[in-house]
Length: 425
Image (tube, rainbow, N blue to C red):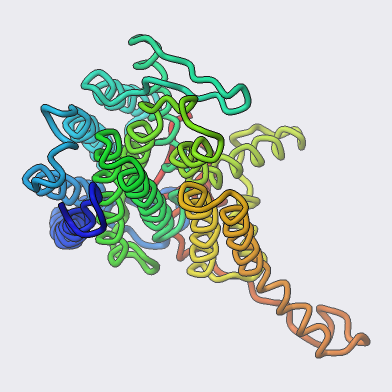
């Protein structure tokens, strides 16, 4: 066993992370060069906000890194409990992800219609579920009970859950480096949770697949970010965004959906819900943005799919944040939510609550920096000089540097995902 205590193969998981990171970094350069040489760059569309064509297909490189990491893990004695004949889950996620990346790659090249892409997502998620990675239990916290799923219910819920998460991550992929960063933070949180479970329960089989997936997910995101952080040289495309979503769904299903949480005490129950909370945190940003957009437009008598410039990232830009700082602020929120929830599995509830609250306060403070600067500047100018008279207002950050902002169909040039995401529906 690796360092870190009985049943906790930290060294081996570190190798999985490293291989995923290095192979993804190298493969991304190869994919980018191949796409540029072939001339298969996506033309600028009316709804795009970037100002020059860039290659997509980053998801192909990310999948290459993921498979390389999984192949390595399969050869490490300390991680063999995550593979056949002990469990089929890693094979299931590799083949499900293959279908998802294939569908996403085709979409990156020829732009599939929403219905075709949805069918591909269902096929990939269904394959993963039928091959053995699916929910067995659904814990209902308020009733402190667990629903045991039959095979049909298990496959149906796993498929639905994976499709929802894939589209949620696809929706958030709107600025350079945003989806990769949020995916990496989620992977880190799932890895940390799995390591805690391995340590507490003496190497339980259920924690090996999510630990391997989490380490590989963190690695592929870390390897892709140098190519994708603002200013990006390549986009992950739908192939990458949907891959991240499927891996998050797979890790959460493996960690939460196979443990009967009602058998544990209250404190442990909170900890065992962490994978679900981490995933909810990962797509809370895009889902909140989507719900707000639909409510806002409907309330104003407009189509829910009409364009506007009121998305969350637009609001942060309007506050005075730069594009890069918008991404960093959203990273801070994701760190606060993901690692804050993981802390419930490692510390007493009151300590974990303080950690979560502290993270939220820091993220909120970072969000408010431009407002605080404006107030300080206004105080410096003196009460007799109204804002906008005698001083130029804060310049708004240009929108052209974004990777493309997530949005519903029809969000043309108003912040809808331009290059990297156009979720089904």
